[in-house]
Length: 209
Ligand SMILES: Nc1c(N[C@@H]2O[C@H](COP(=O)(O)O)[C@@H](O)[C@H]2O)[nH]c(=O)[nH]c1=O
Image (cartoon, rainbow, N blue to C red; front, side, top):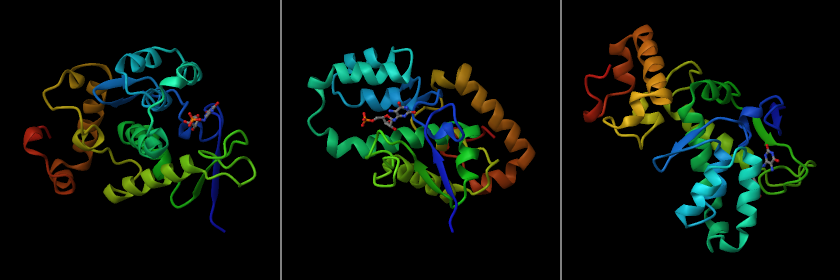
């Protein structure tokens, strides 16, 4: 039988798969404290509402804030919500090597968001739910596999952060700078020439290795 991996709360095993797990993502040139903050914000077209949700101190508060704004929900939310979720999950696992490794190491296991309170994103607790979040995680895992199945491989910044320009401020401090440092160490260890064969540099990143 194929292995099943079940997750629910961020503090439990495989809690990294929860959207409530405390790990920022960068999308639309903004840093979101958790994938949930991004997901809840995208329910609205008004960027001022994004700021309000982004400023909440926890994903639980982000959910509450969005639910208070329910009447302003974008009219096509039901049609777009899966692709919004895919974007959030993809950013999270492409942008954080330690999380990427955990997802890649699940191999071909079936990933199940086990939560009786949710029959769309989760399995409804009894398997009757759609498990859309689990399915999306497996889709992102397949996208990671397309690049490499090596859990330790560090992706180049232009793949992990396709929307952050080479010349942008992001790379000069904190998270972006840490990523570049980690990546350069990895490339040195791996061998720059070998690495270049796997990941030819886009013009704007030339001579970075
Ligand atoms: N409610 C919940 C989690 N579920 C998450 O809440 C979101 C609810 O989506 P929606 O109902 O469509 O706005 C979605 O991201 C789902 O994965 N996760 C957790 O760790 N803890 C929670 O308490």
